[in-house]
Image 1 (spheres, helix red, strand yellow):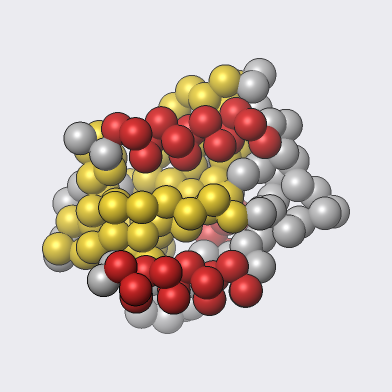
Image 2: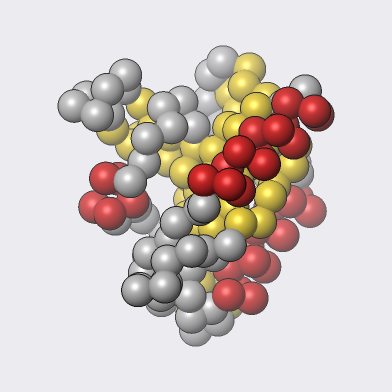
Length: 144
């Protein structure tokens, strides 16, 4: 059940993390869900609205999410995930990432940015049906 993403989009989301270093970048993945696979067709860069700790937290403004939903609908796509970077931190979800994840069935892609350069990129699928039973599972990325 991989997350498939074309090489140019994969490169773009990793570059986004390098450009915003030492702060976290964030964005939205648009695509199609072909259960159990997720196929990325577009990425939308989002602004990180966290001003208190942008080096280790991110937030996407509700207006950007609504605009992304509209863009997805116009393109016949869905929001299938989100991405962000971890400056000088592993590409693993943090307790904050988990607490703030609410889009079930979506991929959460994290790229470790080490000293300004993209290193490992991992994906995690948010499973469950409620806040009480949600969990992240490792979700392989297939670059096409």
